[in-house]
Image 1 (cartoon, rainbow, N blue to C red):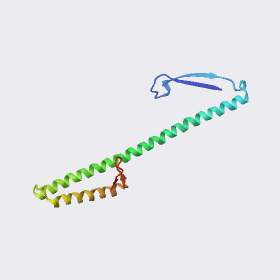
Image 2 (cartoon, rainbow, N blue to C red):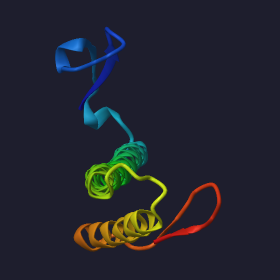
Image 3 (cartoon, one colour):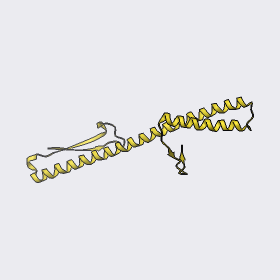
Length: 139
């Protein structure tokens, strides 16, 4: 039986060449049967622990990726809504002849904003969310 011990040569290992290997050779017939069983048991536990750790890390990374993707969709929707509001404001200001005190213009702007937000939520299939600081439901 050959056992190998690997020690990294550099801090950021990227390939097999970044390790120094030390081999220890022992004949299986020289090891007691109970010690062989215990060695296999411990080796299996080490492999399982490593695999479980990597699986947990992969799961956390997947969650992080999902959260980032959701945030990007929300940012995109916000950007689209902002662009729509700017265009609408320009149209309203032009149609009013530069009279910002007109109540009809304000009402039209508020109505258009609500319609845009509803349409964007339907398009992106977003559910109702809560504002993180005030616990207010955002529609």
